[in-house]
Amino acid sequence: KQEVTQIPAALSVPEGENLVLNCSFTDSAIYNLQWFRQDPGKGLTSLLLIQSSQREQTSGRLNASLDKSSGRSTLYIAASQPGDSATYLCAVRYWANNLFFGTGTRLTVIP
Amino acid sequence: NAGVTQTPKFQVLKTGQSMTLQCAQDMNHNSMYWYRQDPGMGLRLIYYSASEGTTDKGEVPNGYNVSRLNKREFSLRLESAAPSQTSVYFCASSEYRGSTEAFFGQGTRLTVV
Image 1 (cartoon, each protein chain N blue to C red):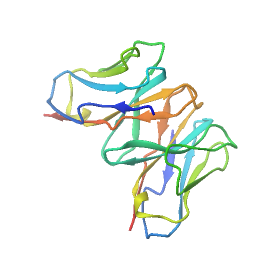
Image 2: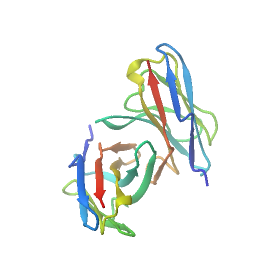
Image 3: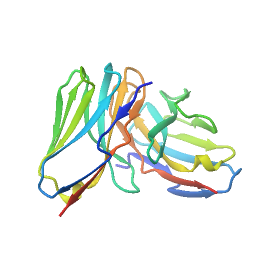
């Protein structure tokens, strides 16, 4: 069974700090990996999608990297802001299969 | 641009009652999904529809049924609700099942008492 792990489960940082969220997966034969943001009581908002042939994707202050051989992805957030406070989920898709989700990292950015 | 719309947003059921969760997408996507989210367990797939006219079981299908009414709409039915089905339910869609970005609705918070 494919497993997706996100460590730490919770993280608090002061405003302005750069930070890295981690995602690891047991089966490296992924098709793509997607990072989502979830605000309390809300749905999931897609942040970045990385195809298996890509090493990284960038959107504004966000940069996601993918290392299939080691079964890892990281989400880098530059110059964090209180508005970045949310739960960040990674999800892995295998060929013609469905998304497998991690349990998320709850980020708090302290003003 | 509405994206994926779920109704209702909140629901309280008594054990044994039935209900249907509705989902509609306006992105002309082929594939649609139902997930449940429970504390400490992440999102788990209940059922999916790879294309109009097809439905398949996901990881946790017991106690649920689905209907892909047309390309836009995918409903989830609880025939006899149980307390173990208390959860937050999310509908999602993607252009195709395998390769593209998935978009999610805002969720339905269901409590079974």
